[in-house]
Length: 120
Image 1 (spheres, rainbow, N blue to C red):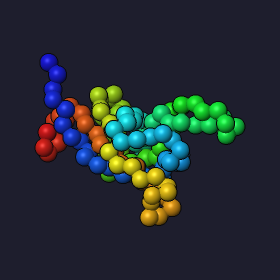
Image 2 (image 1 turned 120 degrees about the vertical axis):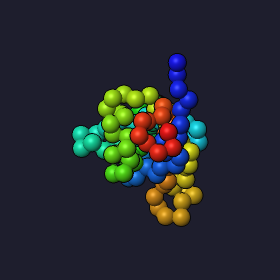
Image 3 (image 1 turned 45 degrees about the vertical axis):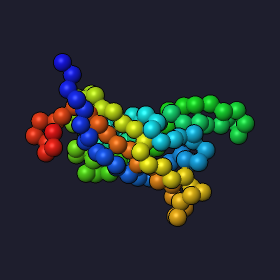
Image 4 (image 1 turned 60 degrees about the horizontal axis):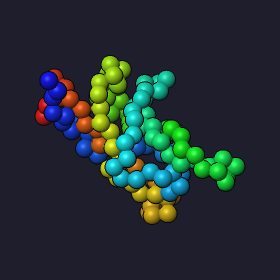
C-alpha cells in the first residue's frame, strides 16, 4: 500500500545557481533531482541544455545549486536512505528578468509522510 505524498517543502530557493538559466531550457514543472555533496549539502541537479563549442546543443545533468542549511538537516537523512521524493521547479526567474544580476530558481519537494514531522 502506498501512502499519499505530502508537501515537505512548498517553495525552497536554490542558492548559488551555477548554469545560465536563460539558456538552460529549464521551465516550470520540470523534474529535478536532489543529492548530497561531500560536505553534506543538499544539491539540486537537473537536465539542462548545454552547448559544445558554442554551436552543438546537447542535454546533460548539471548541478543547479544547493538548498541551504535548514533544508540539509530536514532532507539529508531522507536522501541518504533513498526516500522517494518528488521534486519539481515551481519558480523561475532567468537573468534577463531578474531585478538583480542573479537568476532565481525555486523547487517544491513532496514525499511520503515522515513520522514525527508536524503536518504529516
